Length: 165
Image 1 (cartoon, rainbow, N blue to C red):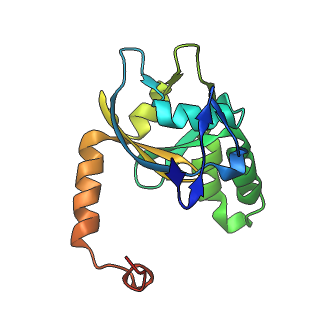
Image 2: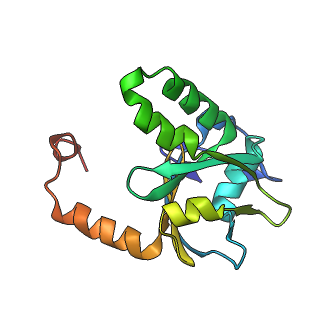
């Protein structure tokens, strides 16, 4: 398997390279929240997290009305950067830090998405989990489709135009 130029092999749930700094999440998963608001962690993400020794995640709001899901060690670094921001960033610090919830991956490889976070992100039962590098984004499926359509219809930033495909 290859992940952004790095090769790795999964052997008995252990990556031969594998610290949380090496994890790069990518790709979509269409998922369904159960009646209690739990989400099954897809096997490909679960294997990466397990190999890096990560059993805890932190979930918080995303500015686009989605949720961000961080491996706990990655969240701790992100949180340090947030805390260091100046006072004029307080409303944004409040959004990220004030809504952050720590969750454990249970024995059935599920995580509970708290009702407060589901409500804030307008989540129904059908969701889309997107790997975006250092963390995952969890979207209501309908909202994600609308956001993707708006993105495609918008003007592409110069930084992306200059990117070689």
